[in-house]
Image 1 (cartoon, helix red, strand yellow):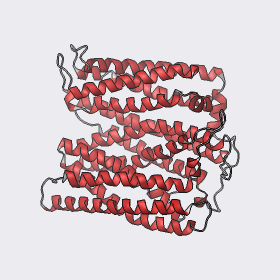
Image 2: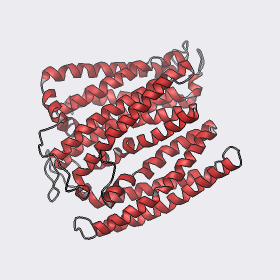
Image 3: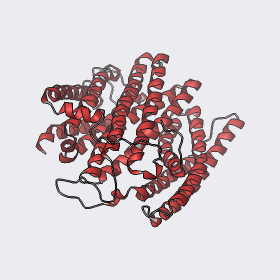
Image 4: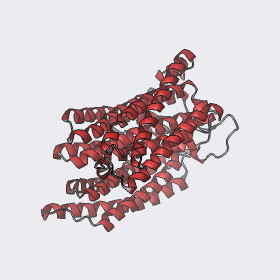
Length: 471
């Protein structure tokens, strides 16, 4: 484990991503707290806004320390560093203002012993502005070290667009930093025994798990973008990439267990009317273990293209053929192993689409003789299908990752539709209005729009998945 940074650059890389992802997650929960009228949720979010503002101090100090350390290195562009510094300073200034206002509002609500007034136009508005500025600052920061992102020319049938590398860098921060905030919300919910925050935290765990799939896929494509062919003047080691891939595979399964346990508890609590202490404890255990695995995964990923954080005592791998991922690739190339998993994959899609289609039809006005709660039970079949397909899909992709991820133009849309469809299905287990729809009653108009989105997304997944052999 590499939790203690050994340089200003290392510290800056570790903590600078938290404001962006943190504001994204906290904003979502904050809006949910406002809509639910739950003051504890709003106060928790205000406290996290204030804590995020405190990060501005180590971020600024580590950033200036990094500038000083990298100023004499020709590898890093002075103009890129200057642009990142200007936008970063602006983002940190607004971050501090947002945190101060959130802290003042939190203090007022506690001292007056009343519900927080939530100056919607001020705290929420500033938080959105801060989110936008931190995104710009992060993007400019990527350009400092990741020179491959500036490459536009590709060699037909050989090289891979660097857009995959860009996507992976952005996507991997969502589950990695996101799970930290999900755990923070979850612990607060358990301590206060607040059901609204428990439901919000479980939802965040599921979202982190869903984003684990496109993150892993983009990472595989980024591997090809960095190694086939090799980029001049950029010593990228395939052995170091494989070490990162091995941990990423364990992270993917950890996220699947965490998100799966969280979704099961969301689904189960609807029928029981309360949360299970055992299930919640299991979710927390999975989340903490997964966070530990993700920490090592992130560090190994940083070693790929951040030589400034590599220590003299680090023993980097040198065998490009070693590792679990390479062994699985060799195994899955054999048809005797590939064909059974392909069968499992198709069966999983049948479960997913069958369950989603039945629930969608009820929401759209068909089968009104059944209540929504009765149809909601079918979603567990779709959940089983998702778990089957996460495992089988990743194994199948390893059999020929270049052809699947890079060669088939339909693979990327398929992954996008999976992400959209999986997140949209969460609505069915979260909406109180939809849950209360009885037999013979119509679903709310908003639910029908979500149902249409779910239907289109999973039809897109099936269509693009079926066309993979022909594209």
